Length: 477
Image: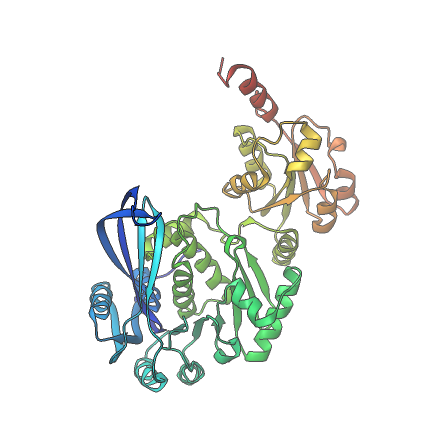
């Protein structure tokens, strides 16, 4: 997946702008006045927040951006405007007398947030008409409109803005908050997080239930598609026509989730501007937000950063999946004519033998599924003291390998229930098995599948590594 040049893309962002201010310093003592740390503030940082952070991300990705929002006549507004303008964002703010620009102050020490103080006040009057006039003035030539709603008053009446954009032929991307989702009826892409989605439709039992509820919501309100962000479970895309796809979270170190949703909204907007389908838009947004959570505080993702990440992940739908999500992914891959390869194991301590065998397995088809024994089943197979690494860690390490497409855990003693459900074209096992000794071989051959046994890399096994660590500290001889 590769992003083309975004020079011709012009995204209009409208919503609640705010200033994120950071006081950063060392905390080496406790106050004598109260049991709280004393921070010796060494530096301060001001960053655009809310809709302003979406605009900054759009510009950082390489597109043109115009930002409409409400600010006060104060220092925070001037700081926001100066920083955004320097980054290439065109600011068209409605200045509100006797009202403060929303400011969020965070006190940080040793990369940990100790305190957040919010400076904000409810608007005394409805300014949706003034906001609408500014938006209307920028829609000609726009390629997408983003409604970034934090319930601070800039989007008190979003419906007319959706109508304006649709009349102008401009796709609408919505990042909602607490309003009923019907207030954004007619939008092309709506990106609720899992909590906002549940508030709109109620609870669901499984991924199939989420998809059904999402499809009903799209039909009811005329949405083109929903992109439900699910934190560590990635994203689920549900389109009005019934199409859907689960996109796994990327295997990244999460440093700070602040602003990740803003980054996702920006990526959805620039890709929607290119006319991409909702799944492709969400795949790029998933990669972009994965970069954002690896940064401290609200931070923009640049075009080169995203390009490098996309190049490193040519298949943006790879990762750890639940059983239901995996069944969906396999069905969709098979409908595209792709050949599914399946293997399984404990993968307790990943070593060069595993990597070589997984690369060889991947070469036998178009998609490689790796099923991993959960902790209890590893103990039953290997005995006390195993696994060395818990299931979550083993899944993550495997999902980071370029040879592996999808990883799933299982709690049964054998993978046969998964094989029955997925019916892969090829079942692969590494080691010194005879083909008839591979668990599940008879089942796979019965429906016409192939069974392969791949060779071992000499002198490499997890059991041998564990034994060496226990007996001589892991020294090589």
